[in-house]
Image (cartoon, rainbow, N blue to C red; front, side):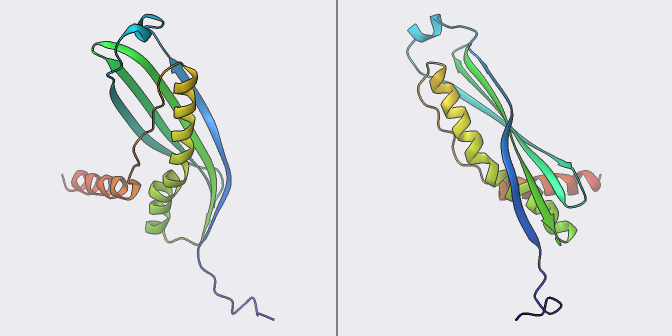
Length: 152
């Protein structure tokens, strides 16, 4: 029998729920766009937003906007807000920020990527698989930008 007082008490990370919070898909030049040779220019905008729901419960939302153009015409625009509810207990502040800014988006991204791919196919376009994203690198870049801003 393990004594609860002596059991190691480390940080706790739990996924409570993963869900699509918002989805939008537009094809402003359909059906004419389908006649053109498929040579798309893809632009991806990615943002994260964190909302504390309770002391140790957080909603993290990954906002992805993908705009695909053929020359000057927008072939389609898809926007997905993929969200999750996470429990994070016992994390020091620096580790908590890293978990919310990198670990949680890393978990959400494959779901958002799949949702975007499905919507694009249903819109009549070839499958769109977004490249993997290094959220650790993005998080570190964000920290560097904050440090530069604080030093001004």
